[in-house]
Length: 405
Ligand code: C6P
View: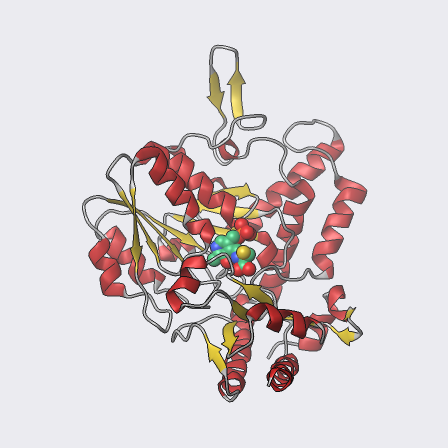
């Protein structure tokens, strides 16, 4: 059991009133709220320890650099990477996938090679590969799913062949909540010497991740979904792969020497971190990782599993509510539609009751096409949500159905 009152007190925004009602924040898959510890870390950095990093010999620059690099070590420990060199700070999962597509993809794939993704990907794990395919003449293959939103593993395996040069699959679907069998996916791909990228944008806040145990080749996540600041994220890559990849962007901090004739690049991880990064925000991400680790990701997962089970049980009793995504292994996401009520109306009406959910295609249009819906309403849970908030959501939905007849 999480000390939920204490946890909620850590998040100042949860005390807000929205439209004169207590805020019920259930849009955590889009971005979650920040604990005071993260806000304090950012304020403290700007108040006492701010300067550009890796550049100055003056005290503030040294302090900021130490804090920034300490955040890297926290991120390394959080996903159990072998080395700090394998932790590349980026703006988020989107930038991380684009980095791999443009750097690894352009240098390791060629015309006719195949990239395998799944039917439940977020646009961030579709579009960068389509762009790469257009650039080099590679081919994108899509592993199908069933009506419950579960990957059809045999079909996935059958897609792997001598031309497959990369598998890029979500660890947890943002539109459905499905958690993919990533160990089996990696074993199948590695059996054919195919590297695997996992999109962990949704999984990291809810599931323990150990990249060494998984043996994935790349793992990406966003800080803002992990109670950290927006504009932060991590690309994990196995050191040997990252060493063999060219830089993604050129500029300051990623070089060893520059002349007009020739530039040599810095070593890992700086080779992939051109320009001034989001210094205070990355330090804030370090504080977020401390916060999450202090509570324990297993405890968070258990709490959210309870919320999901409770919400699903309640939702199934509402006539006219259709749950989209009923995978056996699911994270804390309840995507649904209501007969005769557009998801945008659901979102707007719930907002008038102080309830924040997301309504739309969730940047997963192919998932919407698969289910034949333009959009869904999505409630997504975090460590600070409660069963009482789910009751408020369900009452809101019931009153909506009554109102629309
Ligand atoms: N999904 C959602 O409401 P960024 O925007 O780079 O932090 O994360 C992109 C991304 C990649 N993969 C998955 C599985 C995701 O869920 C997301 C972000 C948000 O579902 C915003 S669209």
